[in-house]
Image 1 (cartoon, rainbow, N blue to C red):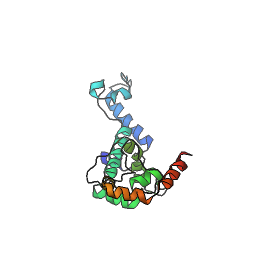
Image 2: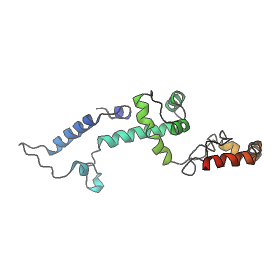
Image 3: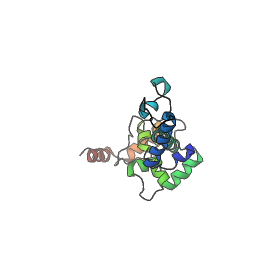
Image 4: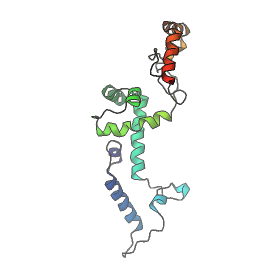
Length: 184
């Protein structure tokens, strides 16, 4: 089975177990009917350095490939990511609202890895077009649901006169009220 198909389709558990069974029978086969399993399949799947044979577990390979596509989606620079984003929404929308129920099986498999990838990565400022409030700067976004100026980009936040205009457009009482709503 071509490996790249595993990144797009969810392989049923029975198929995965059957493939692993074929691998195991190949490794443990002998001339007679007796097949001695000198080491567990789990141990065989460990890297060489840890005493295994370096054979990859099918489920781990599938998760790694789908996580890679989730990473490419979060990067957002490729044509594929732009097309998927226009169809399914931004990563902020997906992380906050979840996956649409009628999305494709391929997209559901990729999108389930988005929270893990997002929570274990940090942003690097490049062009400054990233969202100041919604990107994962400190382990979690700075944005909160009642934030009145959620569309602020990094470039705008670093532009002090513009930042002051944005903050002064929203009186401190309004901001304090929205913070109290979140706490309570």
